[in-house]
Image 1 (cartoon, rainbow, N blue to C red):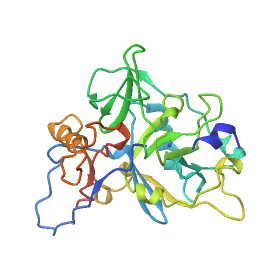
Image 2 (image 1 turned 180 degrees about the horizontal axis):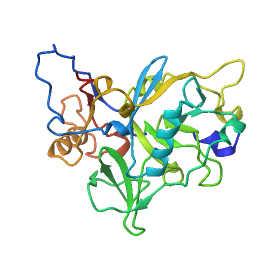
Image 3 (image 1 turned 120 degrees about the vertical axis):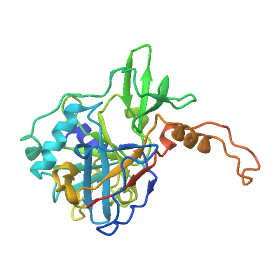
Image 4 (image 1 turned 180 degrees about the vertical axis):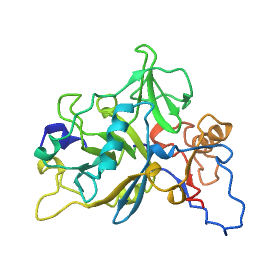
Length: 295
C-alpha cells in the first residue's frame, strides 16, 4: 500500500443537524425552498453514503475541487465503492476507505491536485479572529476556508468531517482512495485536496472500527475487517420523489453572524469565569437540515 494513500485517507466538522421534517399528507401544501437564512444543496453535490450504523450525508464542493468532484461522481455512479470498506481508521485522525488493493486502484485514473486556488473575491466571510495555521480563516458556502492574501491563495480546511483525497508522495497521485477527517488535522491543509464535507451522520463515521496506528499506519489487520460501505449514491441520480432535500445555513447572512456570536460570547451564568471571546474555525458547526424527500 502506498505511503500517503496509507497515511491519508478526507469534510468540515461534526455538523449540527436539525431533524428531518415529517412528510405531510398528499393534499398538504409543499414547503418552500430554501428556508430563510439557508441555501439549498445542489443534488448533484449531495453524496449519500450508507453504513451499517446509519446514513452519512456529504456535500461535495465542485467550486474548489471540480476535478475531484467530477471523478468521485463518476466512480460513485459506476458503483466501485459499494461493498468496499473503511480499511484504515485511526482514532483522532482520519477514516480512510476505498478499494485498498493497489492492483485495483491502478486501473483508475489519477486526478491533478486541487489543494488550493487563486483567491476569488466573493462569498468569503471572515471568522473574526486569528488562526494558528492561516493568515485568515472564514467560510465560503458553509465550508471552512483558509486564505493568504500575500500568496493570493485560498483553500478548504481539514476540519472534522472534511472529505479529502488520499495520495502517495506525488501530489497528483490521488485516485480512488478517500478519507474523512475525525479531528482537526490542519497541518494537512494545502497538501491534500479537500473536496467535500459531512453535513449529517458524522456520529456514524465516528463509530467506525479503529486500527492500531503503530501497525501498518492504522490499517485494520486480518482476520479483522473494517466496516463496510453499503452504498454510495449521488442524490441527483435518484428519482425526484425519492431525492433527499438538504439545506445549509447561508454563511453570508446576519443569522450566521449571530450564530457565531452565540458561540464566541459565553454569557450563560454557568461561566463564572468568562472564557475569551474567540472561536476556532473547526469548532463552528454550520447547521444543516433535511426537508425531504418531498412528494
